Image 1 (cartoon, rainbow, N blue to C red):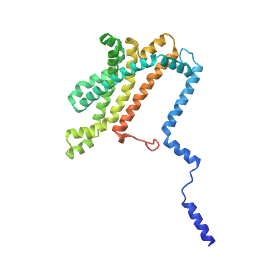
Image 2 (image 1 turned 135 degrees about the vertical axis):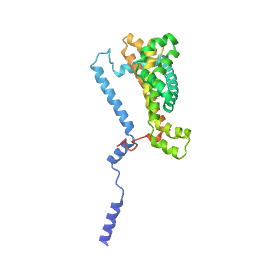
Image 3 (image 1 turned 60 degrees about the horizontal axis):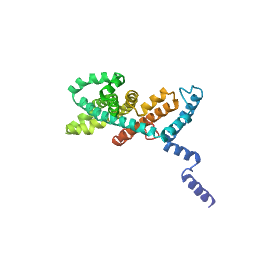
Length: 286
């Protein structure tokens, strides 16, 4: 009886699930919140590095984060920050959305029509590689000082990466998929909506991400040359007054706008092409 009881107890212990130790719980928490933890860690390290550099660099170049925060509070309290933010965001958003609509449309036309591609591709490639930002003063002469010139500069800089990436995405679609769909009797519209567009989504989103950076550059340059408000104008005036803290405040706010728009592109890709998401298991791709 004793031997039987001891064996039963051992079998029971062997069948029990592993005990949740602190180390296991910590690893499980890390895996489920790794992205947030990595983001917080890199921000903290960046702030520490910034403070170290600021302590060993001229105040005309870099100032401590506390000074930038003080400039942010002062500008927010007197209302200048919100006015500049609204003006810059409005100009950037209008130019970016217009560039997205026109760029995707032209990119699709170039991809599905050989004649259109042959006529427009040399111009698109040439204009994309041309420093169009140098033409910003001419935009001020044509459109005047204000929102129109800002939108025009943003549109001009942002539209070309969208066009080229959209065209590349559709033209690189796997021909086996198209042939299979044609063999099963799929119409031209069905092949376009079910194969070509889904395949090109990552390319289009990549073009939109590139357009965000170029568009922000455009809105800043437009406000440098022809505006009395906006974050770019605020950065320009602050640099003329050697107010380094206000300069970096404007740069940080512009960077925050870029981060928000780029993250929006990731969300958009997740919603319309969830099958393209890799590395859901701990971020492993290979």
